[in-house]
Amino acid sequence: MHHLRSPRGFPDSGHLGGGSMVDQVGHRLGDVATWLAQSTPDIAVNLIAAALGGCAVWATGQARRRTRLVRARRFWRDIGDRGVTVVVGAHDRGELDLWEPSGLVGLGCVRAVVAVQGQLRAFGFDAPVESAEELVSRELRRDLVLIGGPDANSVTAAMIQRIRPTLSFGFPAWRKHVVTLVDTTTGVAYRPKYDKRGRVTVDYGLLVRAPNPLADDGTEVIILAGCWGHGTAAAAESLGGKSLHRHKVSTRQPFEALVKVEVLDRHNHAVSVLAVRALDASRDSRP
Image (cartoon, rainbow, N blue to C red; front, side, top):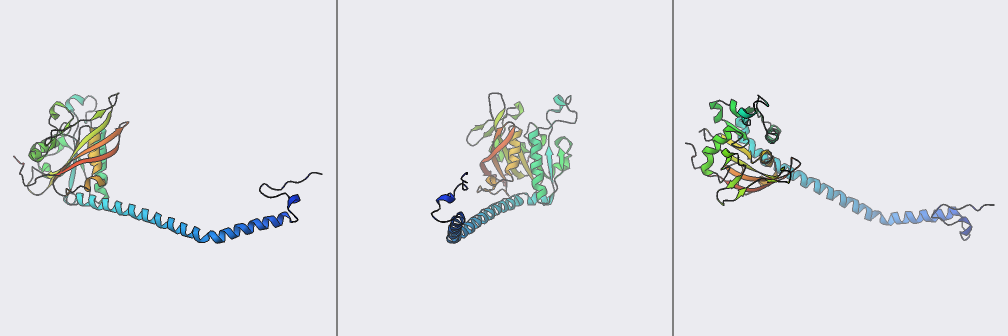
């Protein structure tokens, strides 16, 4: 006759010391019940603490998000209320018309447009997009967001030429297609970096808010210009981030900012604001 084995973890019925398996199971269940009764207060306290911690983390995140939204809303409020136009320039129309007669725009500029429109629409503002070549003279006196550097956007080139006396960052050799941002106060040059295959790994961008030098009614221009398109997109993305608005310089007043972006496989990643400087709005830069 075969001897039946007990389930793993329980003594065999033949070695129970006079008790049955049912009695042993009962004792085990009783021990578990006793442990639960003794541990319930600790478990409850831990659950409550975890719940409170989770709520605190959620509330902190919501508060930070709300703060960023409030700052971004303040940045765009006056421009959005007056009505703003986003202006994009096409690259070298004469040389590239064979590829696309309607004009070619870099992907970085497209991403910048999407970022700007997304921010404006989030606050209830409309943002029509126009080509720099199609703007008529009277439209140049409006509130404008200029996408692209002076070599890609003719309106950017015209505005920087007139704002330049107050700017410390600029593209001194843009007419030669030298993609370098230079700090004229220190002489430091910020050049894009590349990997062994020639792909961009680090790019820089310039962000400017200034009175429109072609108008006298309080309108403004926002310039988003990178060494390459990655820097242009990063300048646009920085408008919705916390890094820009945490600086002591008010972003509701004229200012300039230098932006850096890490690039991997042609995609922007970490965007940092290296410097923010107030512009002297009292200096009339109009010719």
